[in-house]
Image (cartoon, rainbow, N blue to C red; front, side, top):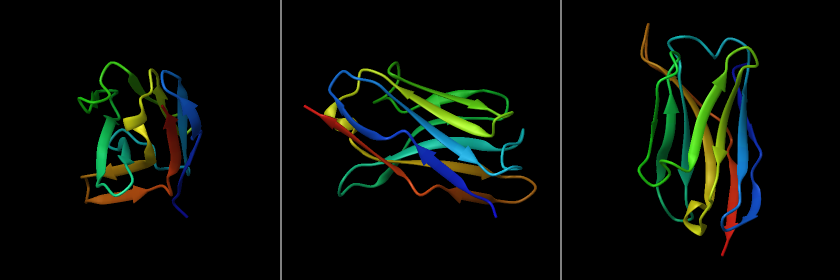
Length: 119
């Protein structure tokens, strides 16, 4: 069964750091798989935070650019999100996402991990 399992969330003070991990079941990581992290703040929509392609190209939301770093280890089937200089507005549930557009559209979500940044 295809799965994405996030871990590493928790409570941290403003200015602190956390590293999120997303372990994928074997076969999900591939050159045509785009991996991403999304965040959903309380009462808000799910928003894209960072993505990384199979070739290693990355992109970030403006709100986290320069503070967060996305990376992937295909040998370990794991996606990471290093979060530094955390702010209270970074609080939310962080979701791991995998998607492909070829040979057909396909998408998978993890269950989410809570990150709370205290002021």
